[in-house]
Image (cartoon, rainbow, N blue to C red; front, side, top):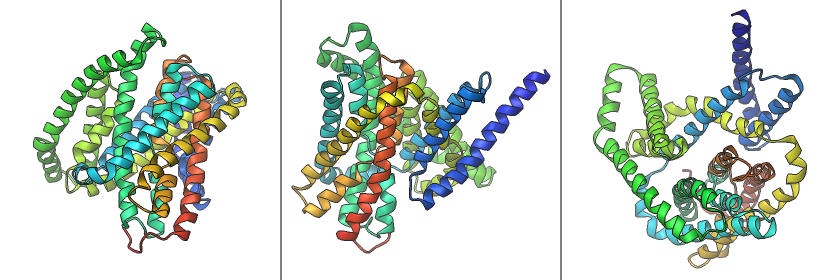
Length: 410
């Protein structure tokens, strides 16, 4: 009993140190203008090295961090869904859809081609890479746009619309990938992809429609009554906990239906996003988000294999090039038809960073095994995330100084 209590106490102390350390790390990253996720991944890798050397995580410690990483990804995707404004997006769909289709299609094809033809990876790892590279972490760039008071400009508003469409399409493609890959593994990667994607995609879309319909019903007929009830019986913290708890339940239902909890968390965020008071909900959810979201990126660092790093540099350089070229060409090319060179270039560069959704895709593949995402490919994509999230804002800041887009503060 004493050993068990000591073991538990050490793990609790370690988690507490990680929470405190992540706060300090985030502060220093902000001062250095480095995205905090880069620091979190580095922290996870240092933790991994310490575990190899000193058995720091002890027995069962990694399971604790795996669980916390799952909570972290739920918090991440819930926040993305909560910040999505579907009504406004539908109104802007015609304006943004052409650029969105180009950026998703071209970035995905370039990522797949780089993995399959240039790196010699199989179909399945290449699919994971291609779909991961369709995603965008525009939040990395938005801070620079807001700092330059350019977010309310026509180009800034288009950027936000395209980014929202990117998030939604990446979630759907991720769900389709997770549905297709197990069947593809059984039938063999040489099998014709189109009939398989058509069949599995149809089943997935049916399940997604049923799940989405349930979320719409909840959003229209239950959500407002539920939040009103909790506002009456308790002060603000209780409402935030109710929202978070509901998000966990919806995420779990999605997992039971064969989707991932990440997809369910995104839909849970959408459920509450239609509420005019969701801005306050988002603000109150902030502390939980800041507490748990770092653990997802720390988990990525924990999963980096030391022996894979030496072989992943070449892979990472190739994938970084594919990530930059695919998203810049895919966004700026179509945008040139409706705006000037400056606006198109700014849009393309702003869409380059990859973080949350891209790494959710790769983490899920790594969990499936080497046949889905080899360790060196995973390490290479971590390199993509770190580099694009660092250089993206640097170039956006310089371009906004050269081509100011507006003077209003969003």
